[in-house]
Image (tube, rainbow, N blue to C red; front, top):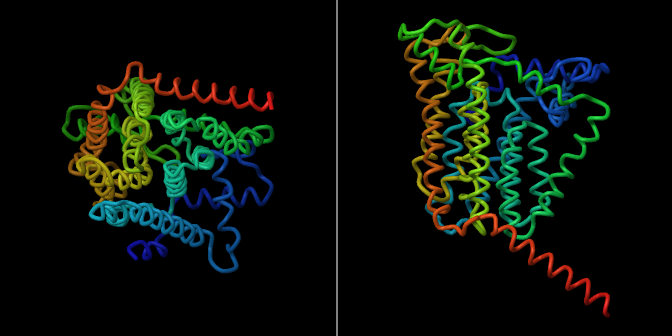
Length: 406
């Protein structure tokens, strides 16, 4: 209900880009080869779907918004279904309630981005994984990678959890099957060029380092420029140029550390509930978002469903911090005073800076709450993976031997 008024809102640049890409495809102009496309190739069917009704029933932008609204409904239904499986009735409706509470604050861009698609795919994949459908879950996460590259950071910890259940082969097989269309497509289209496009970007204004520089600028402590670059805005200047390579290094280090940490935790655990699994996956996801030099507002759409699921287990505090971080994003983009295009004022910049610190605080909380698992684990924890795999291998050999004797 809260999102319905935005069906009539003005069309933003992202939807116009989607419309242009789909029209070029219809005209025979291929993405990655004949024109730039900054997204992985599995997004192409999503961009083409609104063309089924474009011009006959409604315009492309309206069809795209309805399509996104449907995906949002499916995600809410999934949160409701997951919640109803829980024995703790007090918490069972919290994921749906909190998601529905936060999404209206993101209304300005929610229906005009496709980020709810990978969020829904990852949620469905996690649900399948925790239900024992490892191959299908792997395929879902692979599709998520083909939509937005970030689900790739979920694979190592999920692989460890699958290996603990002696189902690693099924999970890997599902991932390979899900990536196979993208692999085959590489013979016809150089889709990997989307990464080259992203690699040339500087410090986007909403990112951690850019917000710190602009905060110092508003306090009169630094010189910086609020500069529009193509379809986004960067903070530029001498300080930004100096910090950019360090920001990339910090981002890479934080993501590698967080993925390794989550995989380590997974290796120490035999099973995890869906709430605990969501909290585990939030560790690399928050590192990917909070330390990224490109922190677009729609990235919060990735976090909110996982944070909603995280309310099913563990402390509320880090999940509430993430909900608040998402809700205050509307103060930054498009900004309450309409300052986004010309530069956020001091109050808005303060909110932006502390929003980013809130993401880091939640990330650190999740790291610290997993410490007891490591302290209690057998060393090295990867023996928990090796031993079941070796046992399964011996059982397979015995079974084959009996079959040969018979």
